[in-house]
View (cartoon, rainbow, N blue to C red):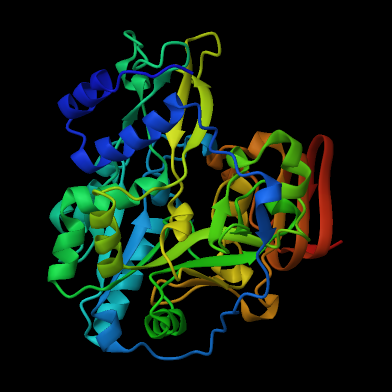
Amino acid sequence: MSQGNFTPFEEKMSEAGVMDAAIQAFRRNYEALCRNESGLIPEEEIDPAKDLPVYEDKGADFDPELLAKTVVIKLNGGLGTSMGLEKVKSLLEVRPGVNFLDLIVRQISSLRESTGAPVRLLLMNSFSSSDDTLGHLAKSAPEGLREASEVELMQNQVPKIDAATLAPAECPSHPEHEWCPPGHGDLYPALIGSGWLDRLLAEGVKYAFVSNSDNLGAVLSPELLSWFAESEAPFLMEVTRRTPADRKGGHLALRKSDGQLLLREVAQCPEGDLEAFQDIDRHQYFNTNSIWLRLDVLKKRLEEGGGVLPLPMIRNRKTVDPRDKESTPVTQLETAMGAAIECFEGAQAIEVSRARFAPVKTSGDLFALRSDAYEVGDDGRVSLIASRKGQPPVVALDERYKFVDALDDLGVPSLAKCDKLEVLGEVIFEDGVVIDGVASFGGEGKTVVSAGVYP
């Protein structure tokens, strides 16, 4: 692949107001693309990660002094388009009249009230999610958690690259298609480029807990905060045991050459190594996308790298108009937030229970979250009920329920004792349906499930 010309990208990004830190991060990845670096991590170069420390929730109390040095950052840039939404995903209701964003705010407010510590919250919004998020906060959030200047960290955008010419991709009919998100690895240039990193450090904030806004299992934990602070590690990744459902998810590994922990995403796996990548007995640990950062060490590491963390590049092949497969082929360059584990000497990982990993990626996930298998505390914490012992119910819904609006007609059975529920075709659960164990419903025509215990 020939050397491209970065000047048109730099000019385009500068004109769009993209911060310099993000431009330099994109430059690094673009130059790697031009050198025809694949970003692939072959199986022969890594060993499986083993015998990690295990997190235990002992019901400890928060240390107000540590809380005062902590910021909670939620990745909030995603829209729920795959679930039929035209707004930010965190505005999905978890309980009637209560959405993800409400619960996140309630968690922070409760911590502030119960400990007296000024726990900070940052929402990493995208250009697509900012207006919806700030509009909702203006109407519902308490003082100190409403304004952009108080809670918003803006995600950057980067140009798509014409796969044939390595020039910025063009789409005159829909210029917005010329841009794409840079992946959640953009957290680091966004923090430094926005000024938030310096501001937090100046306010005495030393620790950051980062997770996805659609993962209500990822809450600030007193045990993990204390463990991280005492470890003096610069970076901590929460991982959990892989299941067959996680075979395509990024896994933790050790680089043979230096013993450094690293994250390998499926896009970084050579095709010939996919079988080993998906071997959940070999590669046991799945990245939950919840991490802990020492902000002072991050600042130093960024300064050493000229404002850029050397995150591995991820190449994605797409078309400039995602809905038109005949449109111009493009390359989208991304980085993963968790991949920074290999950028910090002394970085660690810790195994957490599945209860801390409950993201809502499908309508089936939301259906389970809305059920009685989960409980919502007054402090905004959402957790599996104790009798489930950290194991969520598995819900597989028919394609007709792909969009969340369709759940309104499905009904709400009890899933407190459910191991797996499968819905095939049109089904209506009447009041009083209890799923105990494994059950499957549906077939041709409409299936109405009367009150009772199934199977």
